[in-house]
Length: 319
Image (cartoon, rainbow, N blue to C red; front, side, top):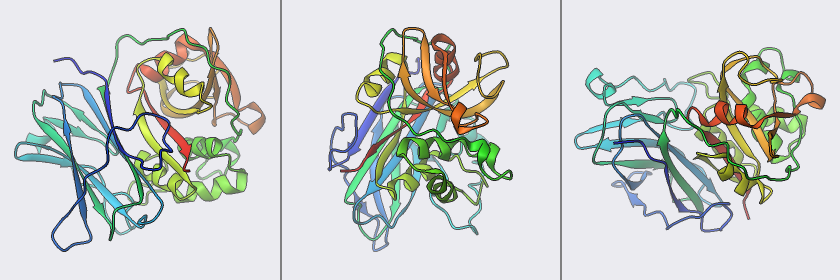
């Protein structure tokens, strides 16, 4: 089997999300506990499939934490609970026999072998179901040998410019993710600093966990999800609606001419527009806010973003 790209979306009863949502979420209470469970069937998952689940919840019933479980036959794997108190340790690695099938990463799963029958369970620790939930389950090839640069053009979205390098020296090189979210949310520098604190995960001691940061954005009135993109044309359709995309990129030295950092094993930027030959981005690693807005070669940017994972945050203001 070859890993194929697909996305399932559930909930979002307030119609605030920018992409099509299929049907409501069916919750079941687990005994008499303050725990709700929703199950989502998956198509066959071939070797090398990236599985990225995300939850957004706004409105009433938002005092929650959540855990994702990937299940197949009598085996299951789970991600860290989001959020977690400081005393909670990071999730222990699965037994070797299970790790051989699925690589459980911080906020996603990657299959190591074909899995014919599988499903995801979302365990929501809450007294009641959230009023406006959105579940997005995106799957696709974890690595792509060919990427689609596309030819669609999209005018630049208006996006705030914030440099992570002007934050406190102790964290400035670790906060590209919350800085990008803050730019898209239109926060000023002081608000961005407070939002960055909200994104901190004490178990991993990092600021870049996707579901944790989406939850932080919910508290600021934004619905959000992690989507997988296969082509820059897919991104252009959102950009044309005025919705920028926070893209996770990787590239070796020389792989992205004019970039704010010469190479990276993982960095986030805001894609805000596309011309015929350029990707218009806000790169938080720029030395100053005045130099955050940049134009990168379209083909090089496509390789940096879509060549591995192709994931991106999509945020829209909750109505």
